[in-house]
Image 1 (tube, one colour):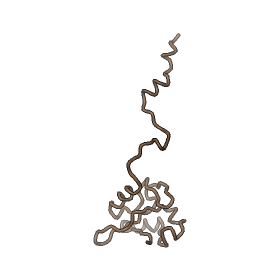
Image 2 (cartoon, helix red, strand yellow; image 1 turned 45 degrees about the vertical axis):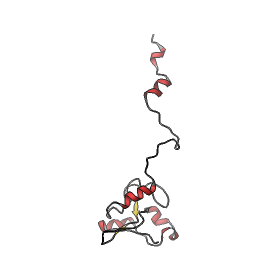
Image 3 (cartoon, helix red, strand yellow; image 1 turned 180 degrees about the vertical axis):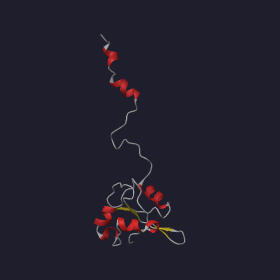
Image 4 (tube, one colour; image 1 turned 90 degrees about the vertical axis):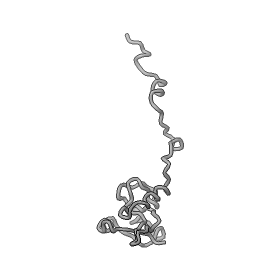
Length: 125
């Protein structure tokens, strides 16, 4: 016969062996990056990366996107100056959002991809 205490670990043994992760969103540690910091980081990238990066959030619906899941309001001028507010818009919102949201200037994923490195998009002010 085996000793019952040695056969199965107790809750205290399991809790002390591994760090416990909270399921509460209020207790989770924040990554430190806010949406504004993310937009500033995207704005500081070269003009050819006007595609939304994977994990970026849409400024309209606030959903995270996959890589090339939308466009960023940004254009690099001939002088090298970067213009635009760096707000990202996913393709779904680009197609469905009313014109009052960000204007009438729209593009499609196919059109944007066909322009290559010269592609840029900026919404109406």
